[in-house]
Length: 153
Image (cartoon, rainbow, N blue to C red; front, side, top):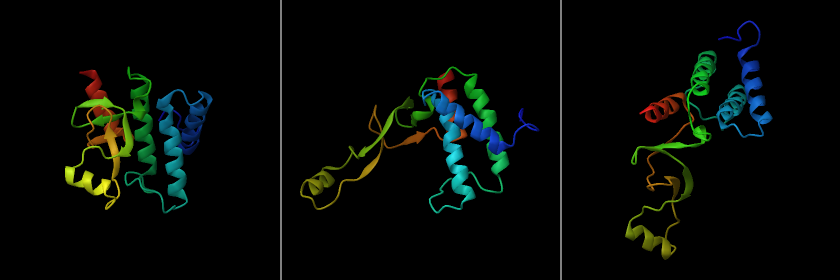
């Protein structure tokens, strides 16, 4: 890492997260660092709400290094302004906006049961283009790499 010897990895993450706030939260790519900052805090405090299986105390240094290397790739790529807030839809094979909402693709039977208030509506993350629930958020390096490859085609 280029900052080795000058800053610790934690200091680098905190500095990059601070840059995001200095952009008035307008340069979405830096949100990676505020998200990572939150994850690191939850991990260190052994918070019961921590749920990232890819980041452990044992691989923390390697994980941060991987994020830093990928961030440099993102900075040098031509990506949409809201790239990290998009999702990859496996059904329509596009980068899309996704939203958490009532499931729109349900059977007639389920719809009737909901109208009769016999069951509660189900909620899910859906593609705003095709309504699919097969969406992958761009929160991991692997998901962002897949999206970058798709953009380069």
